[in-house]
Amino acid sequence: MEASVLTRTKTDSIKQILANQKKYFKTKATLPVDFRIKQLKKLKAGILKYETEILNAIEADLGKDHLGGYLTEVGFVLNDIEDALRNIRSWAKPKRKSTPLFHQKASSYVHSDPYGMTLIIAPWNYPFQLLFAPLVGAIAGGNTTVLKPSEVSIESTKVAVKMVKEIFDEEYVAIVDGGIPESQALLAEKFDYIFYTGSTHVGRIVYQAAAKHLTPVTLELGGKSPCIIDENTHIEYTAKRLLWGKLINAGQTCIAPDYIFVHQNIKDKMIAEFKKQIKAFFGDDPKGNSEYCKIINTRHFNRVKKLMNSGDIIYGGETDETASYIGPTIIDNVSPEDPIMQEEIFGPLIPIVPYNTMDEVVDFINDRPKPLALYVFSNNQKNINKILKETSSGGVCVNDTLMHIANPHLPFGGVGESGMGAYHGHASFTTFTHQKSVLHKSFLFDMPIRYNPYSAKTGNLLKTLLKRFNK
Ligand code: NAD
Image 1 (tube, rainbow, N blue to C red):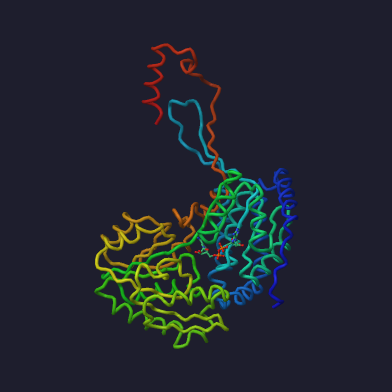
Image 2 (spheres, rainbow, N blue to C red; image 1 turned 30 degrees about the vertical axis):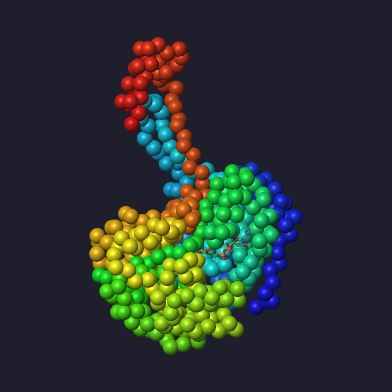
């Protein structure tokens, strides 16, 4: 692998990239569906060509082995491309809507218009998936795009830059290499749509920058995603499915279950099962296990390590700064005031919060920012319904973790402080297109009473017609 430095796009050239994309979009080249299909196929071919380089880069950045990299990143994006290729013709067709009698004779439909120039800003934790999955939506929608990968996942960004430059002309899809200054230089410009994935803190900065130009945004943000384990649950499957979602990417997943509510009556049993399953997954020494990831950099290593000062460590707790390693760690006796319960953990720490009633849990969740994901493990449908009805979160996964984002038929996004907007599958297409309503009136017939001047009689008649026939 080459030395770890980014080439950094000169901020002066950003204006030129945008001017070129604007000119290109005006040529209408991106409008035909055939063009978009061709570009999606080009992207797929590029990914397949670079597959090994991409997987090596992810391994260098996050210590993730090739299988893990394929399942969570490359394969994920390839599936998104396949889904778009299968459905794009039907997605792009105008969608017929009914027309009330009051408006006859007319037809109504919704047209999916490309926004124009789009900007995609990505974070480091799934450096490939979170850059290219939105791009699939942007291409399918008929837009031009500027990609801004994260400066933190250096090796993955280097491969992304090389690959994108080889596949696409910059006037269509450009990639800007760099960090905060480059990101801010981009945000100072006027785009037609901004798709941002990253922290809630930076999400606010992006939203403010977008507001200056009234640019619509999708904000895919983070936060603390709670997990609730009811007393009536399948202990073994719960432990396995929860730990899998928590420890994948060493906990550096936006929708990782963050803190774990465990019903007091099963707490000891559950903790014993967690310990057993961590060992079954990664052995006695996860550090030497190629399937266990590292923490991305020293800054994040120190941040996560500091969170281990909260409560009592009852399992794990091993760290090694030179290897950027933090082992799976179960923490008991945390209090809501502890730092581990205040900020998103984004690491392999598992704080246990015992509870007695579902009302306690619901109140706790509702007193805090709305989570991106919420998990509930239970065999009790009444309790599941209670959680679904009485809490708000970006998404929910019942009796599993993470899997709701792998279903392309479910839109994925946050609510409140965990974000706005959604994508994946068809939702990616609608996110990257303006849903333009069209009412198309016929010349066959005209309703004379609609025009001025209005008498009391025609006024009353109009009111009645509106009430009766505008359904
Ligand atoms: P980050 O916000 O630090 O950085 C993300 C991107 O924003 C990078 O490309 C970076 O260059 C840019 N950026 C950083 N600071 C900026 C600034 N001041 N002005 C303009 N641009 C700036 O996020 P991160 O640390 O890379 O990612 C971790 C966070 O992202 C976590 O909170 C996680 O939950 C969240 N996340 C959310 C999702 C989701 O789908 N909702 C997915 C992954 C990560």
